[in-house]
Length: 139
Length: 139
Length: 139
Image (tube, rainbow over all chains, first blue to last red; front, side, top):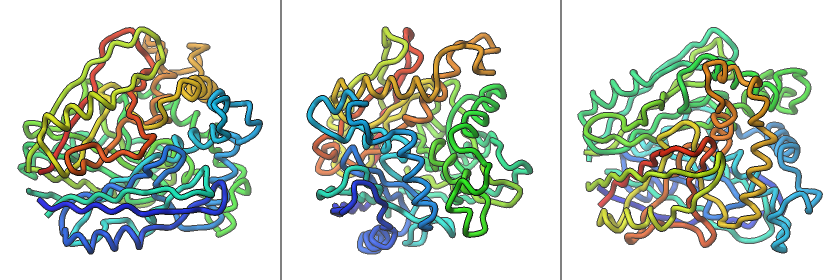
């Protein structure tokens, strides 16, 4: 069994935004030399997500509006978490809707994705550096 | 390390419905000959889910009503995504609630599921063929 | 390839609560002797979750209020599932928001978690014993 570990860093200039990372993840699969296996991609921060969906800007705008409805940023006082001096209580909720991680099959040395599947880093409390972990195991 | 890859195809006649697939996934585990490992089951389409919950029709009706409240199909104009000519903006949202994938342990050659755990394909924009990937690694 | 399997049991005295289990999961990683691999941690019951977020009590209170808004326990008659004699229809919904499982990388023999990542067992229908599965594969 082989394994490969990579930490990607993102510094998103907005509070909330999505970054398309499929190419970067595939580069790690190629670098690993693994032909058959599993690839875990997860946010290492608890106000961010990694998820798979469509690379379509209208949908991304829809997600932002919807997440803001489900877990509004304001009023800051809405969240007991923010009594700690934070203002990111909403981000911890948005991340639960969108998820922490994806696990993707590797077949014949490539990410075994459906035709419209694209991997995104989801940021809900940006304007600072955060890491994403890519861990690949297989043979 | 061994691996096994299978693509299942589903064509659900309704826009939204759930298909019980535990038996089909266990058949792939058996076919793989793997005794100890991990089994990834994921939708390869971004308007569908694979999830684990109860095989109880009342609960499935509850999920449908609840998902329709959280991300209504209509009005179609609610979603910027639908300006591309699609009418499935809601399906991309419902799938985020229910999730893309499950990872299941394999112990002694069988899916290591709790007594009430059942695996479902969740369709949110049906009436066409879609694929589910089963990837198993282990020994 | 090596593997390690452990069933943890929790009996949470409240209907809904969260239990910090990072230490217990790390103990299983250490017991496995696996240095590089993947660790699956999942609820074996369908009214419970395993999730990763902040170990902060204000946030946990926020989650409880938010989940109660998204899927209220009462009225019991709100859920068709409860016509089976159950009163836990809400718990099956809350668990979908929070997720069934997490998959965590193992690097150099430890859980490769970000600085604020903590693993929780999420109970939504407590006051009885339930199991969590820890499955580790790697080398």
